[in-house]
Each structure stands twice: as structure tokens, then as C-alpha cells.
Image 1 (cartoon, rainbow, N blue to C red):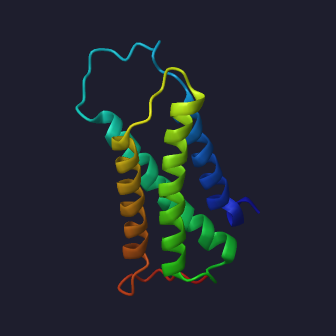
Image 2: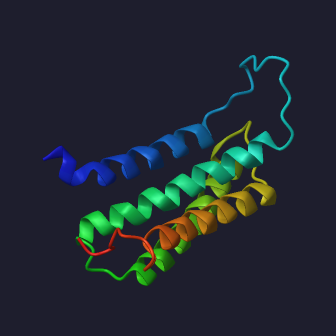
Length: 133
């Protein structure tokens, strides 16, 4: 039973994880002396890449592959970009110590683009795995 809904559980968990991390303040935490350039943008990119991949697999699982790959990719790309913008707006309006950045929206959007690109590549005609279940 759990195997049938694994991507549903993973996608919903990932969305909740991103939301909590995006709205939680890390200002009081000691991060040590390691300074990685653009680590924040790399994190945003990675989060939304995974968001898009899990989202596509979630839609495939829920529709049993009946929704076309192209339509699924387009829907998840739009959802990923809109959700990233929504989270940035929430950071600006609902938190006092987090700020919205255009760079974060760009990193989120690029991550979503790469995520749907990976799904498109993975389920391409050259691959043995088929989109339809």
C-alpha cells in the first residue's frame, strides 16, 4: 500500500520541509567559520530541482501516467516557479527576520527548469523506462 503512494508522500513531505525551512529564522544559530560562496542560491536551486522531480513523479503516480509527460512538465514548472515566488512573498510579509530576494526566485526557477529537464531526459525515448504506468 505504501509503495503505491511513495511519491505522494515524498512530494508532500518535501513541500512541507521547504516551507518550514523557508519561513524559519536561522539568525541565532552558529554556522561555524565555513563560508561557501552562493551557498544560499545553491540551496534554493537544489530544493526546487528536487521539488520539480518529485512533483512530476507525484503527478505520474496520481494519474497513473495518463497525463502526458509534456503537460506534466509544464504544470510542474509553473507550480515550482509560482510556489517559489509565493514563499519569497511570505518571507517578506509574514516574517520579521527573513527577506525576499530576486536572486532566490531566480535560483528557485532555475532549479525547477533543471528538475523538469531531468525528468524529460529520464523518460525520453532512448531510456527504457516509460512514462505510462
